[in-house]
Every structure is written in structure tokens, then in C-alpha cells.
Image (cartoon, rainbow, N blue to C red; front, side):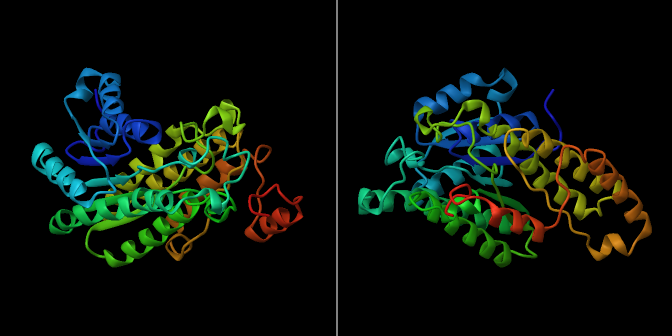
Length: 324
């Protein structure tokens, strides 16, 4: 039986045929959503459909779409709205990877002279303008119904600033800036904009065998599922005043998931206390439960504060941190 959290909702996912997009399509369908899967690969979309259980196939609309073309985006969004009965969630995931320039880009940084103007424009058109095209094509409907979730898939700050990782890094930096601006523009409208990222190199075709990474050391694309579903579910809770217990359970769930992932990659989980927690004893009581859970794993984590993290990073040998 499908899940219930997204039942009755229609999601559009770009770059849906493989990698993170494919995982998200499976997860959204499992949570009860109907999904429009967009990709430039007809064969990839066919393989995606074949990989679904029978119940999922009935709720999937596969659409061959080049998101660098605004007219194609308008057509795809319109087809989703009319064919699936609406649009509630837009996930801008599609992106061109550095392998489009050179397969060994992880081992040998890509220099500016290797990037033709046409290649630069191709990256910008897909990785940055593509998300704008989809947002622009969808926003009229989302604002009209006064409800929508736009989620943009980005990358780590280190990758954005990394030398030899253009045009990918700058395009993702631009996407985060656009996301922040759109979040402010749509504030109060019922439409939210957020970014989600895997937190390191993910086990997808964007990290080819020639990259030098061991596949076992790469982050599973499945880590993207929980925060994306939560962005829908948690905001539903906020609309009805989430209980302290629900909030605490969310903190514990996220911590456990990040702890499991940290066995392969260092991860940082930040905790800050808002006045609404400190000022209400019953909320603070529940939050202590999350803190006790985290502290119980003290032998597996480093409990610290941002200043100490900065000192630690500064003490590392040059080259350990990308861009250093």
C-alpha cells in the first residue's frame, strides 16, 4: 500500500530518469503522490517506468522535456496540470555534470581554456536557467491555489567555490541565490522555496568510475528522500501548530539518519534554540529528550560549537579541504 503523506498531491521532478531524480520519483510514488517525470532521455524514462511496481505506473506521467527550453517547460507543466489534475510540488533536480567536459575531472581539475563558450552556456541553460524556467512556468498555478513547494537540488558550498569545477559550481551557487530570492519573493503566499543537497559526492552517474572514488564511500541518493518529504509534511504540521513531540521526533530521526551516513562521510548537524523553545517549559521538556538521545551517542560524535569547527578546519593540512 502506498504511503499517505503525499496522497492527492501532484509532483513534477526534473532529471527524473536516473540518479537522485529516479530515487525521488520512487519515493514520492511510495508516499502516495502522482508524479510527472521529466527528462531528456526517452530510454531513461522508459527504464524508470519499467522499474516501478504496477501501482506506481498508474500514477506516473513520463514526459520527454529539455528544461533549457522555456516553451518545453511550459508545455510539460501544462500537461502535468491537465493530465494529472494539478501541481503541488516542483523538484528542480536536472543538471549537467562535469563529466560532460571530461570524465576524469575529479582527478584533474578542469581549466577555463578547456571550457568552450558553447559548453558554458549549455551548463548555465540547464543547471541554472532550467530551474528558473520550471519555476516560472509553474508559479502562476501555485500562487493561484495559494499552496506549493519548490525544492531545488544544489551542492555543497565547497563545490560551489572549488577551483577547476566550473561551470557546475558557479551554476549551483547561482541556483542557491535564486532560491533565496524566490523564498523571500513568495513569502506569505503559501508557496515555499527550499534547497536540498546530499552533503557530498553521491552514488550516481555524475561520479563516474574514473573519478577515483570507491562506490562504497559515496553517499546514497536515498538520503535526499527524508528531508524532501519532510518539507511537505513538516510545513503541514506548522500550519496546524506542530506539537513538541512531533518536532522532537523529527530531530531524533534526522540525527539517526545523519549518524548512519557519517560512518562514510563527516557530517555536521547544527542545533540552535529559538525563544519559542526556551520560553515554554513543556516544549523544553520534550526537546531535552532529543538532547538526551544525541548525548547517548557521545562516543560516536563530536559535540562542539562553530568556533571549534573553524579552528579544526584551519588546522588541517592544505588540500584536505577543497579550495584550500
